[in-house]
Amino acid sequence: MSTKILAVDTATENCSVALMVGDEVISRCEYAPREHTTKILPMVDEVLAEGGVTLKQLDALAFGRGPGSFTGVRIGIGIAQGLAFGADLPMVGVSTLAAMAQGTYRTHQAERVLTAIDARMGELYWGQYARQANGDWLVQGNELVIAPADLLANFESQKGTWLTAGTGWAEYAEPLAQLDVETEQGTILYPDSQDMVVLANFAFARGEAVEAEHASPVYLRDKVTWKKLPGRE
Image (cartoon, rainbow, N blue to C red; front, top):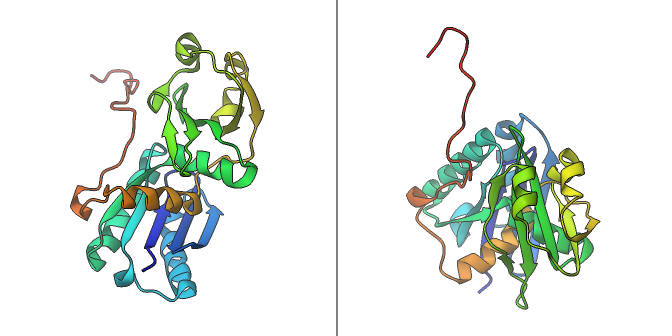
């Protein structure tokens, strides 16, 4: 029986949905900052209708777990949990950084990818990925939220050529150009659910799906330091 997984993602400026039925993937993706809440559910309806399946016929519901925009990540997991609760589906969280690595393979056949998303506040979300023989991805070290200067100070020299993915490469072009690694510029700037659903299929096969109430986001940045307003404590 073919595995059926629906993936939704609103963690960045992209808004996307994808349905995997066996080897077929049906997807919708749109660059839509601040419009996620109005666009995501119609996209869900469209891919389900095109695939000829209902929510209750799915095996799992995947979601972009972050890192990304705090608001975007919360919107995505909230919508995904609502759908999963209603259809009694398990959930699978997928890294937005890993999804961009998969997207870079889909578009460039790259098997080594350096991902960097602009995290604001002078920092970036960073991940280094290598594609495995089975098509899944392995993160080298850990996903991080880090200042470019700190990344430079702690980055270990890498052999070979790595493709880049994400908005962080343009935002922090000067410091990232100093990394001791040979890079080629990729075209993937944001995660896309058509790549997330591929990774979710691996995770589902490994038994990593959880009940909807246990699904959780990954922010990486544990706390945010806000400048105090004058006269306030």
